[in-house]
Image (cartoon, rainbow, N blue to C red):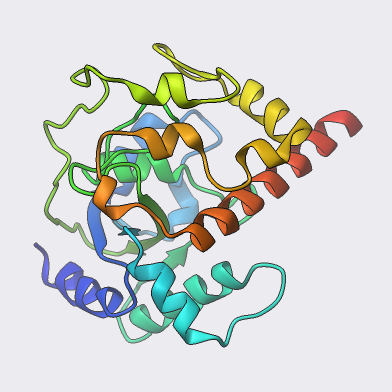
Length: 240
């Protein structure tokens, strides 16, 4: 592990951001279509540290903090603790999943490139230990190349899963052998929010990481946030 990454992992781990991986700007740009690469927007950065959390530790730190209020308190908490962690690290620039286009990065791709998770039928990345109970919180662009452990290398969760309870569990039938029907999920969620307000049934049914299941208040918070995002996209599509 690069010294820079080790320092950052120690600092972020204090607030429950306990998944820290590394990739490169070049590797990310090679997988992105023209117009969506980091390119010149990376400010000369070569390395990317991808930070996230597994299980409930980050949620517990957020709930214990109590200083962030407003429409997006979790995003505000995330920005504060990550920017605090990198404040004295030369050349570090933070990017977040909740930033608007065109600054928004493909965090699922970044995490996959960093070896933190693998794609699943339910649309989220799956980690070998935490299963689907991971969340990506920040990408830190740095001037130099960086390395970190890659726990998900060689891990391919869904092809090796015999049970596949996620398919049966989804009340809308939008999880299948070919993956997650995003449009169908959004239509169901916007029409019948009560059905999935307490958590994604397919995600909860996953056989991986069951010991690291988010607590009920975290599930409800994230489901409400996701529904607001879906509603905003639907509204924008109608106006287009």
